[in-house]
Amino acid sequence: MSEILVLYYSRYGNVARMAQQVAHGIEEVSGCIARIRTVPAVSTVCEAVEDSIPSEGAPYVSHDDLRECTGLALGSPTRFGNMAAPLKYFLDTTGDLWLSGQLVGKPAAVFTSTGTQHGGQESTLLSMMIPLLHHGMLIIGLPYSEPDLHSTSSGGTPYGASHVAGGDAKRPLTDEEKRLCRTLGRRLAETATQFNHSR
Ligand SMILES: Cc1cc2nc3c(=O)[nH]c(=O)nc-3n(C[C@H](O)[C@H](O)[C@H](O)COP(=O)(O)O)c2cc1C
Image (cartoon, rainbow, N blue to C red; front, side, top):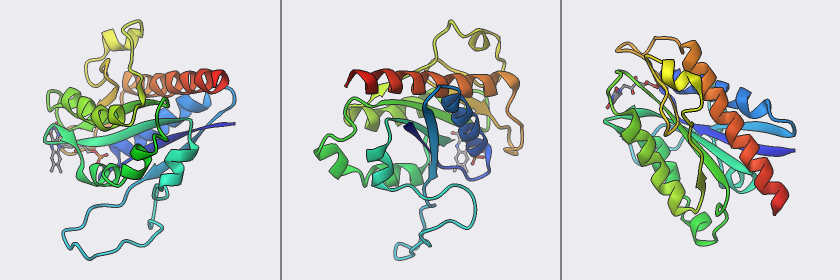
């Protein structure tokens, strides 16, 4: 079995729902399973320590999750056109993995949710790719051969999957957005499987 890590942060649930769709796409590929993980919120009280297990949702990620998985799907809400601090905070702890090159050559994909349609999805997705490129990961996007990329009137970009959640963050994923999340997961899992076999 090839395990693909789906690592996300979500405050209001939209990116969590996208993560489920990405996981469905991953598990459409024979021999692949998704390992879903999240990160704790960053506290304004620096000494505060989270319980090691969250009260609900996916378990917190560890460096072993990154080491053990054959690929990574990384999801974040857009915050001022950038990834959310809790995810960046976790990535900033991965210097040891970078030093030892343990993520080099693993495929990765990114996804995000915004409040508004032109609120910075692409800048967030690109910003999420930067640390992954430093780790030597191989970035997978969404090609325009996907019909949903042409017809969507909300989320969906060639840089990765996206969702427009609305000002109240309550807009559900559209059919196109769901399909593009699944396609991203499937493409990631297919690539991870091919690379795994050729190693
Ligand atoms: C501090 C903050 C900054 C935000 N910045 C943006 C932004 O730059 N563009 C945008 O469209 N939405 C922005 N939003 C809205 C979130 O991206 C949106 O609510 C997100 O889809 C929620 O994802 P979640 O349900 O997974 O937490 C911001 C929200 C917060 C709390």
